[in-house]
Every structure is written in structure tokens, then in C-alpha cells.
Length: 143
Ligand code: RTP
Ligand code: MG
Image 1 (tube, rainbow, N blue to C red):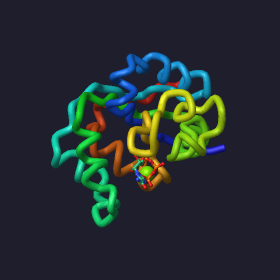
Image 2: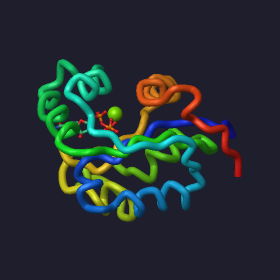
Image 3: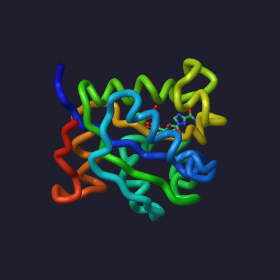
Image 4: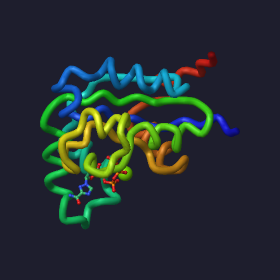
């Protein structure tokens, strides 16, 4: 099994529901270790740059408006197969399709306000962690 890192964003809806701790607990229960974390209110340019791959999609403007609507918590998570392990506990993009017990099933209300983000590959994870954290801000924790 490969030890990977992945980027998590607890989105403005979940932060607004006071669910930061509950979601952090799920990461830890799944064997993921938080190796960097901070709260941030994304600027429009930061949100557009983060989701640049979706720039041509019809939902892009709504996505950027939502992601800049309040503070988020960005974290780097580390663990065995962290990218997929994290996506598994997030559940499907649309909470209506998310398996019971997943973060999106329990905290999200719609595909637009879906509680949390997770990197979709190790390549994306490297870009996304570098987007928010310097090397000195990511800790080499082991359990
Ligand atoms: P994320 O990047 O936030 O972890 O979500 P994801 O990989 O599951 O989904 P992705 O395709 O990357 O889409 C990014 C975010 O855009 C919103 N979205 N809206 N209205 C729509 O059809 C639609 N499709 C995607 C979601 O908020 C999704 O998380
Ligand atoms: Mg995505």
C-alpha cells in the first residue's frame, strides 16, 4: 500500500454548520492523519485558480460564488491510499447519490453545496497541496 497525501477542503456550508470537528474526526477514524491545516476565506481569484479545470463548465460561476461565500478549512491528509480513502468517506459528488454514512450524505444538502472537497488523483493532490501550503507548512507526521 502506498502512503499518499491528499487535499481536503471543508466547504463554507459545512463550516457554517459547525461541522469542522465532526469531519476531522471522520478523517482520523478512517486512518488519515492531518499533516497541515488552516482556515481561509478564499478570494475570487483563489477559488477560480483552484477549480481552473472546471472553467468552461456551466456550474463554474456558481461554484466560485459558493466557495467564496464564507470561510473554508483546507487540510493536507496523509495515509495509505489517501486519495481514494478520502474520496470513499466523502461519498458521491451529489449527496443524493452518496452512500449512507459518508460525509456528503450526512452534511451536504445539494450538489452545489456538498460539504467537502477531495483531490481526485495523486497528481491533483500534489498541485492542490502546493496551491495552499508551502513545504514548511506540511508536517511529516507518522503514527
Ligand atoms: P470536489 O472537486 O469539490 O471534491 O468534487 P468532485 O470531485 O466530487 O466533483 P467535480 O466534478 O470536481 O466538481 C467540483 C464541484 O463542482 C460542483 N458541481 N456542480 N451542478 C453540477 O452539475 C455540478 N457538478 C459539479 C460540485 O460542488 C463539485 O463538488
Ligand atoms: Mg473534483
